[in-house]
Length: 587
Image (cartoon, rainbow, N blue to C red; front, side):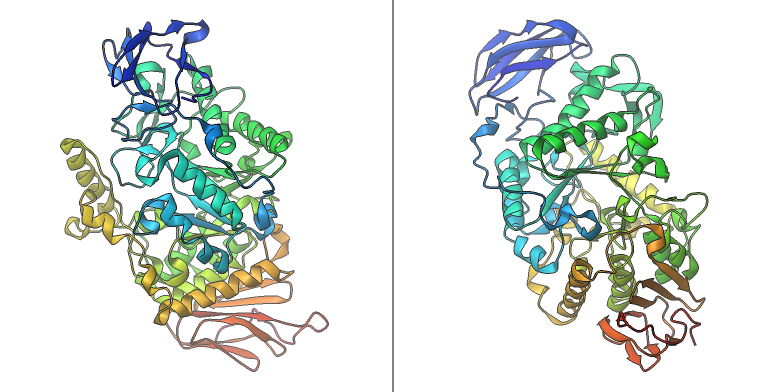
């Protein structure tokens, strides 16, 4: 709860509630209208629980699912918070360089494994690296409270309380304030499609589930059933609370295809309108992006044009097409992909990697693309990064296409220096039966890809988590330093070159050869990326200069030469077009 206001609890499935103070004291809450109960103001730092009378949790003492602080984790007591006590220093913050989304670069970051400290303060110490890298936005994996001390965060159960092991309320505010001081915007991944399996108390107070709709996690969150108005209000209040109380610059909505809503006005339409209103009130841009398997342009079209009004959507097809060409993997969801021409097509329209689907006329800044992210790395048996599978130069070639594409590029922490560490799935449940179920479930899931059970690290073992922690000591060494220099060069070009950045669909051309060479043209800039292991030469004609190159790639007069996978970023002068066909056949 927020200490500056009286305690208010929405509990329509309960008959009565008592406030239970720690270390002692109890008093009944007063019933109000529409399922609300009201209590006293609690001084900052006071810890409390709720005793429930009636409903499915009759007689139980529970943690308030809407508490703003959980110093001891999801099984501990809630804590009253004075949000006004933090002294922000970002009054002049206007969104930084990332306010122009055409030049945005997102850096996806998991707080627990970004540094050895595993918390917000540890991440603050590395903000200078991100500034030098050239990103504009940090996207935090979910920070709402989840089971145990370590995990991905997608099994959160307390939507309002920052995870205690990361540093809680104060730690998160220190991080955002410091990021703004460094000129970096901060996005937060939030999960409204399901709740985690351990520590959830929402069911004791709220009509949280709708069994009429099913998701991969069971009954759907109730956004269109009986008493769903209150659940919708809670979700929107939670989203706006993150943005307002923590000065965040946007939210990434996890798996919105699993938010099943047949209401006249979709929850996401209502949410996007609320976020836009808050942006107007704050006087700075707020960015609402989503992950969706629906792959429809309506999700990112403005509300007035009949869309949901989301500002951007994760578009995974470009990842899938590049990954399958580089690795040859074709199992499970990779099956529809695998040709160089699919890479070229998806660079132009991020929904054409497989049929059906099209982004239509939606501009490129409505789509977020990547060669690696937490899902695509972490949902492998051993959590291998792309360069672990195909080598550094091949991964760098993929990055050149993504960063120079007409969409918004996203980097996964550590990819910019070819980090040696994997990023496997890990969790920290308290219940032994749940731990066993997680182990069994992951093995069953990976069987679809043909991975043997013995190849899968134990997700509950502390060593699995520790293997994922980035090793910052390697950044300036050997091939890591070479990779980092290449990424820095690409991002510097993206920030400054007038022909790069996210743009409309007709702002780029792309062609491919069957031998694995993909050519992307953005005005005076030409990106030639070779994605297969055989040696090739590719005719581009005379008149090009090199802006960036992987170590073995070279420009030799009118042709580019690749002894192995790699990329060249080339430029011609504005006054003179080069002769020849830069998208000509590979030899």
